[in-house]
Structures are given as C-alpha cells and as structure tokens.
Image 1 (cartoon, rainbow, N blue to C red):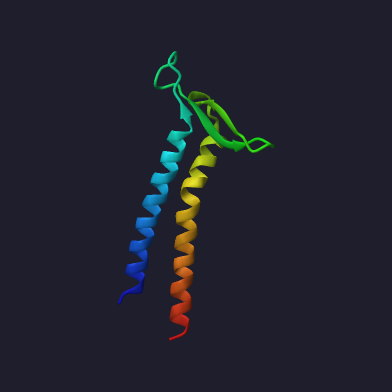
Image 2 (cartoon, helix red, strand yellow):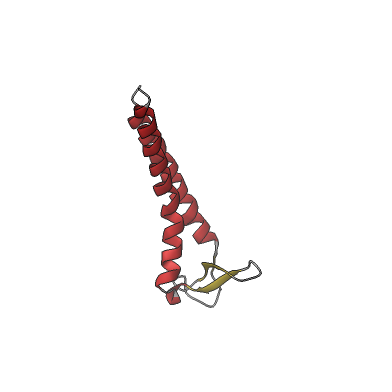
Length: 96
C-alpha cells in the first residue's frame, strides 16, 4: 500500500470538507435585512467580545484583519493536517 498517496487523498477530502464548513459557517453568520441589498449583509467578523458574543459588521466595512481571521480559520486545519501527515511519513520511514 502506498501510504503517501493514501494519506494525501484523505487530506484532500478532509481539507475540502473543512473549507466547505468554514464557508457555510461564514454564510450562517450573515443577516440580510429587508431594507438592505443582498450585497450589504451584516456578518460576524470572527472576533469575540469579552463575554463571548461575536462582533458583527457590514460586509462592505470588513477590514483586512476581519478577512485574515476568516482565511486563517479556513486554512489552519488543512495546513496543520498536512504537517502531521508528513510527520507520520517521516516517522514511518525512520523505523524501517
């Protein structure tokens, strides 16, 4: 069995699933009011207040750090998993 190919396939499936979950989570955090256009929703920025409630802001008013927070959430799990996968392959080759 080819471990690298098998783990890479598992990583791709998990990564695509994680990205889909984060995109869904972002979309669920948006509220479309009836008096605003569809391109101007009120969305969660990803930042939490001291009491744990999420901050919200208009999507058009998102700053760099709001987008960076969502991109970090989207990419942190796939990058971490590929690192763990390479570590597993490295350890497995070391014990041959």
